[in-house]
Length: 269
Length: 193
Image (cartoon, rainbow over all chains, first blue to last red):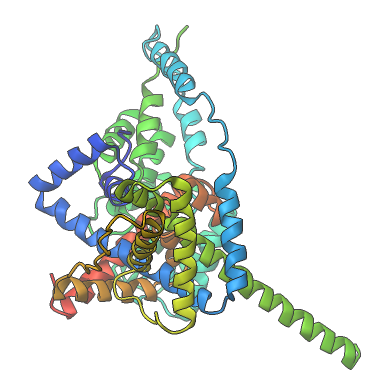
């Protein structure tokens, strides 16, 4: 099984019946021993049933407005697709084997110099996240401020960090720290990273990353690891990446594993 | 613009709207059809030893029968699931198929056994369904694509214009967190754990 899966991924795979027979047996054994896991699986089962019911209701309503003739036509089209020959799969296992061999050779390469500089790695990973506006929680912002938040995130995604920063700051005016929504604190920190205010961003990201209640803590942890990289603090970066990898709930675990591997690779010559 | 050209414009707009509705209906029905086809055919091949072609034919007939029952008002609301209903129809059709193929054999008619869920399970299921229905986009669409249409994260990233798979995964994680928090509050309100 891919070790990059976190706990939520495994529960999904189990409930969607995508685990192998052995993996399924192993997971069910874990469930027998772990009450929390069992309860999580039950909750997810209800949620999946909820989406199934929603999808079925939509289909039922669609069928109510569809004639028998149209139904037969839809079924015929669907059956035609099932009769099409399967596409050939690429030689994936061989390619993976070759890539793994090369990775091992590079990993045990001669010399003490890292293959990838902090700057190189930062530049290649820092574009991996783009954000999408979602209404803020807790009713902390009024209608105008929600609109400003949406505009600010849009500007951030377009690379206008100074413009985004101005909007985030205007949302924060007159508010105490506990009145500022988490997303505003988080995005402000990201803008600071992009506009040369890395030291200010450090404190903010560290605070969100260590807050168990924040819904941005995983994003903050990942971006903090990238910031350490930008500041060439490789050991702090590695240490945080290890924490991210070990946290079964963290959706960045896969990315963290890949970045951590690259940090370890030494130059061959 | 003349009155005639405006009327034509209105009719063209109406036709576009109707086309959209028809296309959406087709998509929803096709989704449902494909969702249960594999499992249905596999089940009846295994349990009743019928050939795959016969199983596929029975699936199509069962699906059409389900459609007829919806249109003529025999099936108005789903108590368990459409999948369970479809399988029930399938069992009766398979029984008729086997009886016609081998009339000298005494086939026992299928029993419709409904699995009983506890009252607590039923209330929990209703509460979850309400919260799922109340979700807004983008979370509603993203989670429907994953849990109902069973699209991969890569496919979802493409369909929702996310930069890459990791962004889609992050959004899903955030949406799930919010849904679970809403459910925790709802369960507490109705006295469930």
